[in-house]
Image 1: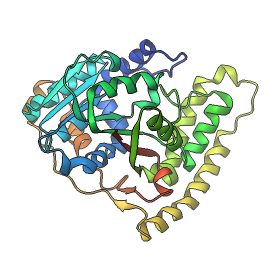
Image 2 (image 1 turned 30 degrees about the vertical axis):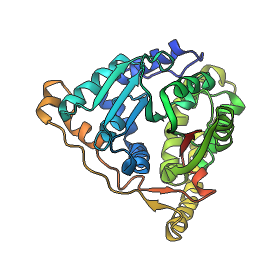
Image 3 (image 1 turned 45 degrees about the vertical axis):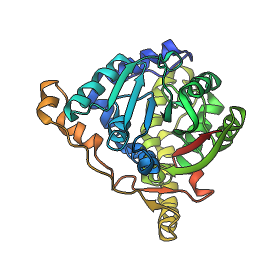
Image 4 (image 1 turned 60 degrees about the vertical axis):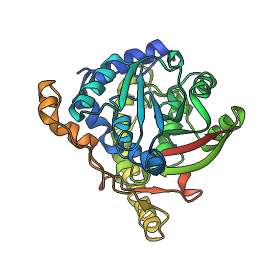
Length: 329
């Protein structure tokens, strides 16, 4: 598979083209997302005990990982995505689970043609890509019942890895991500909630290893290599010392790893709760050319790479992912 080029223009059609390429290679996508696969576990944990007899809509569902997890507790689950390849894979995975509680729909977010309202709506890694957040909030308001909960997770950049990455993006307009159009911060969420009459009731942080430890180094080392290739024609007159940069980042992350040890010891960081395992019919996966081992690993729980989260302010704002729960007034 060819290297996927980051967006040069921000539009729905341009995003569609990128995600068409991303979702076309199932194994590559799952392996790419493996390091942060417990975001959905933590979101699910926050509402698991409330879901019995309830309905939930997942906008931007991808391969349906959260949908199939939520169906273990919810009465009805609907997953929507704008990418046909993603919906096709989600339906295969649903078949392999023999789960009739979930419906997958191909649609853009603002064109969702559903008359019902839901108890919960989930935006997983979506808001940072949305060009017009007010527009999608109007869609959510139409589809979410009064008193219903809006669940969102987004990359959070108030950590060591994020500050360096975002600095290059903001200062030089380097393409540090494929399709992000904004950095989602707590203040951004608070302003969005106030504007659309939602109450922000909980904030959790996730991805502390990726934000502060050796994983931060590995991410930046790889990310900068790719970015420098993308901007090579623009920086030919600049003396770039990538080796020195990598060495400096490694030294810092080795130092900051001690922060994580301290936060764990003081129970600022807590272990993500264990959830039920998702059991697939492997014959169905094989019959549909799905990479069985990778699918099982992708849907499994990560208890080693990123096992911690935080609800303690301000530490809950400095992971590499922010999880926000809002209630519709």
